[in-house]
Image (tube, rainbow, N blue to C red):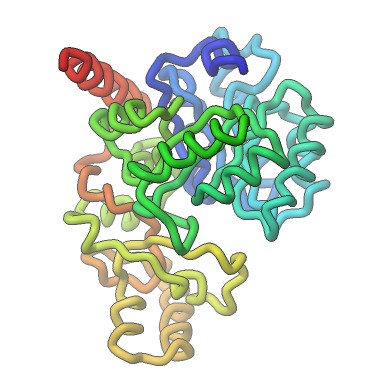
Length: 345
């Protein structure tokens, strides 16, 4: 199994990756992370016109750099198979040939294998990474899909993930042991409340080949994010208290379209507080959809908004907005120091 360094010669270790957050992780963020020695990912939902635009921005950002001569576009792109037609996504892969195609949230786990086959046929140089949230799902994905990497998402992560899950500190080593026992070789990435070099060092110590950070990059200058969302991320403290997991967040606009095993972690917004107070779902949906028409699109600071603000329990460690390049470099340097210190024991 080739190392990430062989596959992506520009990376510096420990490998830092930005999560492919739909609506928030665009081409500029992804390219900036890659140029800093990490690996950037572009998020997407249904509109492939937006995905093409963001991948084009990344491509333009690499102009006049050594990355412009790469066989693949040196960023990845994330797809949500449960809401996206395979043929539509494959057209984008064939056109841009991204270094990584990230798959998350299929209707059935065996759907990942179908997607991976089509992706590899469209762009043989692109690597397939799949996001999982349990030992069992990782085993099934490794056996059927044979991805180059599996990102194990711990229960502390922001945004969507397994409704029932474990923290990365137990999920990663148990999965690694199970894969080894089954004779399955695949690189493992860690995600979930990793915000700084301390978290990266911990993940590497657990056996991760790299880390994926979402919430931390929401507080980056290159993220595509509403000012109120970014301000809410920075002001949040005590992440285990100001965030919560709930299917309510996917019911705010109407019926929940996500597969049953998933829910999402958001800041504890006004909609959720009212839900716990006994306000009916219908009334909460009405108030939410009315708030979307306001200038701030339903996002307010001070946990007073009605629209979901996806964030993990590590949100209290996002203390200021910085460039994504600085985030990658600072996190990597701190992780190296922590690992060097740990090696002395």
